[in-house]
Length: 397
Image 1 (spheres, rainbow, N blue to C red):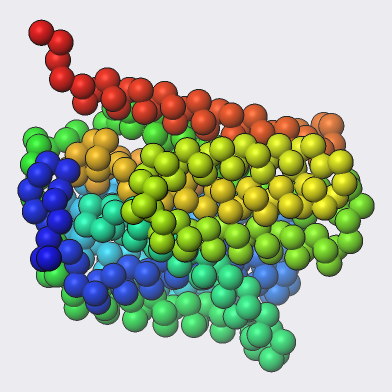
Image 2: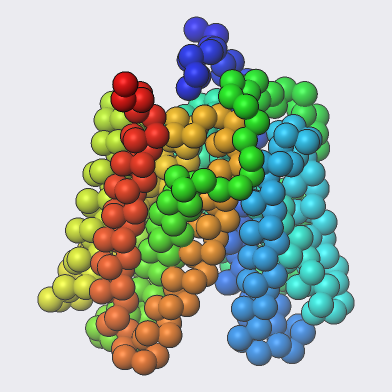
């Protein structure tokens, strides 16, 4: 078969295999710096004489660029086309990594981080929208599994280089080379990254009620994912008496389950459908977070963390995949940008809230926070489903 039916019933061409490979490499490229940043930070801050808290400055610069770029992705895609937009994003990312590698001043590294964040927002939203439009839920789960692969390889790359007495700047040189290669590949294939012709009127970039609900789901989802990943180690070691080695293994297992779960979801998505995948994933997340909170013995909470990672895995890519169905292809291109921006914001705000609450009470607040956030996510998703069904229902005569 040369095509598959679109949302509106037209026929879309499946992308060439080379584009699929480039998309997967693009997401590995998004994951690499995410995994490397925390490991490279002690060496970087020693070079510039910065306190440990200044990592927040790099993260703020990155997040600001990411938010602005991802929100604008729908408009930029219409203006430039997907191929040129991805090539531009990878070029900006390479420039950002070059600035980090070469800058003699801290301000240059902060600016470079902002460029990398801007590029990540463009590439993340652009590839999500393209794959959702052309390939669907199975490919999107594989795409997001590649982010996990990059996030896993990043710390290994940094650790290996630092153990070989290489400078932390070499890490950024290698990241520059990776992104420069992607930029060349995206630019060389720019004419092939076609998008489906619009089958509905051009959509305004202003979010609708349904888009706002979807944004809130993404905000809470990534807040849960990030909070579980960032606070579990401290919860297990400082509050529940687990050894640092065991806690590190369990947190690593959480991220491994998140990656493996996306690969598994890609294999079963066509059998259970998007609705079944989301319902089972959200139910599993409720069970996992409840185990983290209950934890009559440390191992129970640790197993809950692994269950949470496995259950969360399919939610983000599957929600992206159903966006064209809910909104139509043209509206989805802008909506996906809004959704990934909300996701980035949730990944900063919810773990921050967990830290504030833990400072006032104890780290045990992490468990109930995850449970409540999961309940909110399920409620918001159910509300979005009802609104979507009402908007797509035929008028009553």
